[in-house]
Length: 139
Image (cartoon, rainbow, N blue to C red; front, side, top):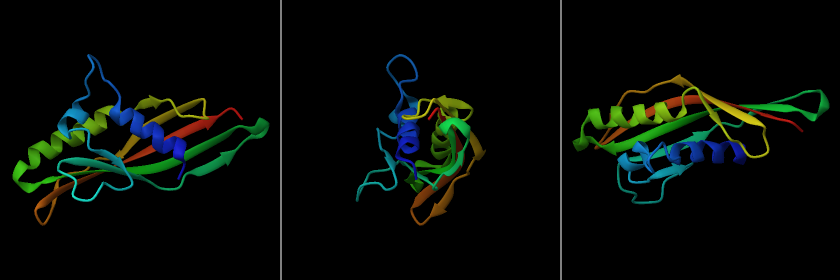
């Protein structure tokens, strides 16, 4: 896992989308976490995990990192599936086909690989969406 890639995804998920707001942050009350959420976190929340990146090295010290990551949205069943679908759409809107600023890289880009649908897990809804991030470095 590249910390720079993880930070770039977090920055994009929490970025101001205009007028000092971010619909995703509002929908989940700023409960957006990397790797794991704190114990007894309220719902809904967003959690994202990243697979270790593949690294390609090129002449002149340049490199490219490519990683897949999964964004999982958790919510109470009593909120209904429509709320979960709305939050998943907000995640996709923030990430799909977006350029990212990635520390120690000259550019980054994200694209959606798959979009999820709500599934029940006891009293909790869960939605998984998969993305790919590609970042290149100049040295």
